[in-house]
Image 1 (tube, rainbow over the protein chains, first blue to last red):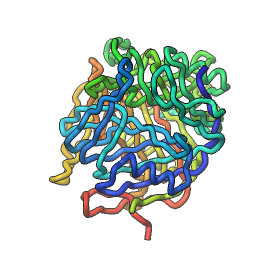
Image 2 (spheres, rainbow over the protein chains, first blue to last red):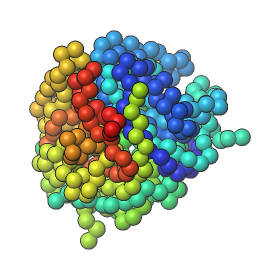
Image 3 (cartoon, one colour):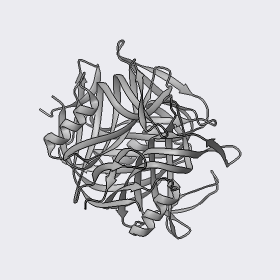
Length: 144
Length: 144
Length: 144
């Protein structure tokens, strides 16, 4: 059965990330600094370069896809929850090049050109990531 | 004139969908089970296969696009509202293959590998879908 | 340092935009009419045509990308904040053609076929856009 965690919306932050910062670390650090343990994240902006991942559903490993040129963040959506006791960002993104062509997947890293993040805090019993044997991913599971 | 329905945020749910489940049905069932009639939905994750639709704006019909391989859900955004008296999910998605290449459109169906859904309940007078003669789609219209 | 503006969720609107309307103007007008100064925006639907932009990170100018055919709005995400004293929409989108192929970037304009917008009002001290010398963009900065 699906895990369902009921939460409530609390604070909401609009943030402009630093030029040249690494985006995944920046959003995670932002959450830690603001005391946000669980949340929903959306962002738009542009990256100077990025790495995305495709999860091989048979081999059970991420394949890295390097994007070594400037791209627009056409979308970035994800969530913050607890993994190994700490706030953990899981985000997927679509990235558009100078022709508008889009590549996407799991966002591993990216160097910020400019990025506007909407971080919504959710409060209540936080979902916790644990190893899932079926997928070999760390998915939300019942706490205890 | 545009329909504008004012609502208020209520409960928010983070849900991990079952491996092998059909994603559109899963999210719809989740809403029914939780008593959510109106809401905003976002999800990330991966599908084992999917079908998306492109609405032909002249012929007024959906053209199916089969994606017969595993993909990342780079984005999934949509809403829940009432159609024919029941909660109805309308979601669009972008899906990325092993090279990071993205296809997208109206999400018709998909088999979950892993999926994390953020479902925000909205309360107030629910928008209701009715047939729209201009587009032949079921769009929100004034409730009498 | 990143700008961080703390806000609170207030009203939430589900809106169906008019067929044939220009999408960026429609959403901006909607916000003005509803008195929403700051917010988060998400939309799905379809456009009859669109123009997206790619920001050249070296030349510091937007390059226009015309999409002269009907497309699905696979995603549209963005925010409303204050620029030159008025509510200003900044939105990025991914747009899918009849084969499901996706192009994306900064959404400059688009003619609505059908569009469903979720507009969440955020209240508190609004972030204000000012010229940023590093990027030549109007980014959120501290309100004195």
